[in-house]
Length: 364
Image (cartoon, rainbow, N blue to C red; front, side, top):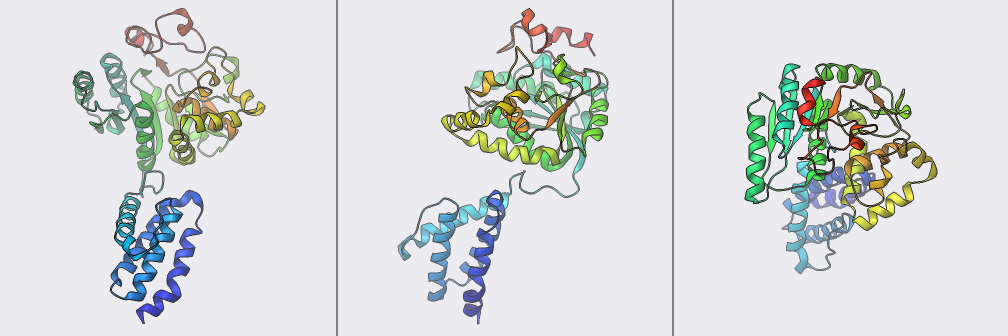
């Protein structure tokens, strides 16, 4: 009886699974993993064994694994399916959200800059916002010099009663760290404010962002709110170019973009640049190139950057970004500790409007 049920229903369920949308690969794996476990329970029967081999072969081909042609391949096929099944149960953050999400969370990205991080966390503390602030640090991967510097910054964060500190030993690199944190936080929070350690929030930044999120929440044409203004005519009342220096959005708006952003990050550089080249038509360029002196295309055409790619994706979707009514975030990454921004007039003026760490409290 069991074999008859298996024969009549098994491939129907299998086909239902593989016919799911290509974007639902994780859902497929969950279903296929359960089918595999059902098949495994009946493996003593020779007829079921042959079905199991066919199932494993077709599944691995579907999700990009090896092909299996004989009973001798069965153990490897079973091991491969077990691995995919285990991975499917982890359910990446963008696949399935947590029920009863928390309302509002703040991401602060730290690394080795201690003064900037302390300024940012102190500002959030004065706004009573640390209870929903999570600080994320990339790791050192065994580099002792880097480890010492990161641990100094982690020590700074540990002096504040933040909700959580995420500190890993492996070195993801900043781009993957951004994606990892966004994926995780969008799964757990409905609304997210994103600050790098040098994005200094003014005295009422948190309340302003929360008010602005309420305004854009139900408008699909607006992706984000940002606090570090370009100070250019192109950003009033809305800006068609994303700003990554102190921004906020909802998990509902962020989730589909994150899937695309992860896909772009996963491409080879040659494939990514080919995608950018095909994406940059006249309409998209017109939306993107609205901040002369700091144009996204100056980066997009050469390598992947998370913020410029996000700008491209939202421009392709014809989405806008809303500046806060007044500037509530100042990038204080100007000066000797900066990788890209020496203290020169160019970076103090629009569209950068940067300040040095020592000037942060003058704008609080």
